[in-house]
Length: 325
Image 1 (cartoon, rainbow, N blue to C red):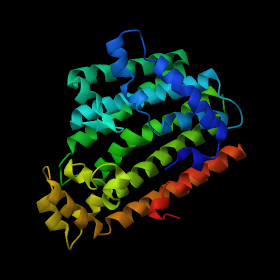
Image 2: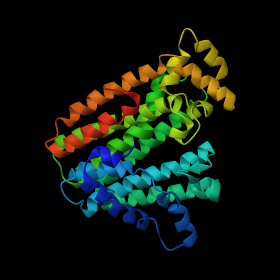
Image 3: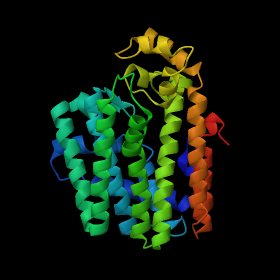
């Protein structure tokens, strides 16, 4: 998915090129070893979705981003990267963005400490942008932590509830995207109403983004995903399609017997096929479509027509693979 093409704001893409230099410079201190660790995933690339939302919300693609707009995007991306460093340790991941994960290359302890360093740099940049943004990122970190704890607490639990699921994705995904839009709105001094509208757009966008990923995890091919289909099932992360399937009167009992512990490749594929055969995917798409409607509603309140159209294009196309109208 090419986010820049779907957003249709060329100036934002140019601003993101400028952001790349700032992103690396923000964590380099002159220690060759530490610098190699902290820039490892930065140089591996990535969608830069959170800076994209921050800069778009700040400028609407109408003019070049200011230094504060760019630094807001850097602070958010560093927080995201820090969470990836920590996630990979907990998941015992070997690969991230088609390169060795930090924990695989440098060890768990270094990965944890480096993640802490990235979080500290994010906080420092936020503090330089003012108390309002500093407070926002502190609250966002609390939400991220809450979401991660919720996911870990319910891993491999066949009794995971919808409340558990939504708590995890609101915290781990939607909160940071909401903050991305809000930071951009704040650095560009938008009106209070537009700050709130953009914040809500970011939250709904984050929900759609995660719901989409959760569907693709069970319906896409290994090649499309860049990882085995059904990987969440194998790792004990039971998302909305699976939770619906677990309560299916026809196959729920069979799925419950299969889940609850780590799966080998054959078990993972069997579980995935069971989930796909139920209403789990359709229900997840339905919920995602509710968020699409909500996102379009809040976008309509924005005065910036170029930004309205760009965000509508982005959110409406996010679930194109799933044929959500």
